[in-house]
Length: 374
Image 1: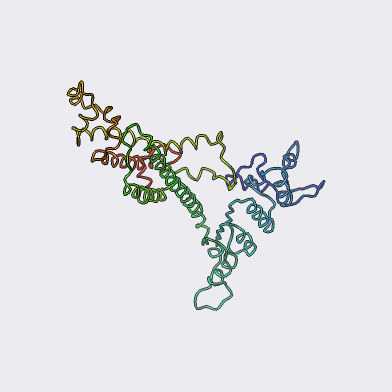
Image 2: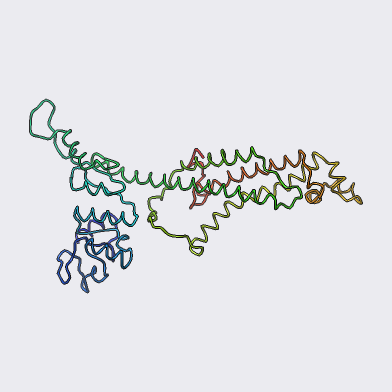
């Protein structure tokens, strides 16, 4: 009852099935410390386990509900360390926050993935003045006691006011992880776009198959994609980032029905930048052939009956489908290929704006305000 009152003040869920007691309960024994109602014992009625051993048995035989609750009651240093091991066995990431001057926290800190020790003893104890021989504690003694328990801690905070930095540290960590995932996702999406772009080259409507410039391909894959991907790794988290619960470290497979939207968005982001340059290639090829070699077009690609009329109108369709261009190589075809690759780079840069926000609308905030490097 006292634990649930404290949890309510902390903002944790205290409704039905909200907590599990880690104190083992013998069968048929009464527990005076457990919450009871007018109808039944809410804990027993919900069939929740009691004690660490019952939690392990429940995880093996029933489900993973004990790992999803937000509160554990009747805990001790021993049961807390055992539950940390249970979370570790089921591939969960454990963050432990505790007082650094308590030796009992040493095992909990050691078993956690990340441990944060908070030293509140230094601001509560009056230290001896320098040059005086007395029995009060020295600052070095308090620091030594705290270092014994927090030798395995990743972060050591001094003073109760430093607790406010924990949320900021967690926010920065989540934002960094999200930005890293976004950066890798953009790089693979860009590589997929280039693969689709290369596969569509032999499938072009034009009789002249576009040739991808080797130097341009190198710049796109080795310079453009890594630079944009690296810049995306510096994206700041959204304002409501801490309100979203991160996913658990569970091994699962994406099903087509459950992740249809994810697959569709990923393919759409990779497909559009790869297809748009091919339409631009058709337009550029026709225009550049009329620009650089109009005599060849008039003799090989136009009908002789109304040649002069077609030359005046400069149609693109006869040029694109001209059989004489199948083995033709000149400034027009090379320039059209360069323009096609340049448009791929431009489309990829434009598509990267959707990776800055990922789950938010682009019009909600300009992308460059959240990521100046991008």
